[in-house]
Image 1 (cartoon, helix red, strand yellow):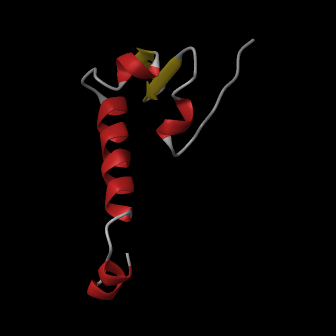
Image 2 (image 1 turned 180 degrees about the horizontal axis):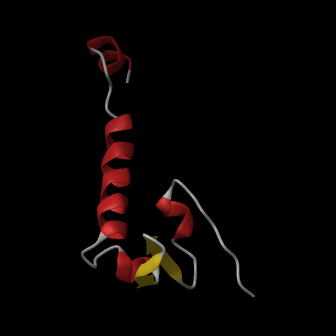
Length: 69
């Protein structure tokens, strides 16, 4: 069975048996999440960016939010 996903959250792909990263119509990277997340390239860069973005979303934005936490 083959399934294609275009998703804006790479964490949704962690259980995929194979991930293909396409750039300019060609396969730039191929593998499982565990390998691509540490291999230099677009997938690793975007995965790290999304992790950082999620962590920053958890940080209180104002002093009042920090006091409420």
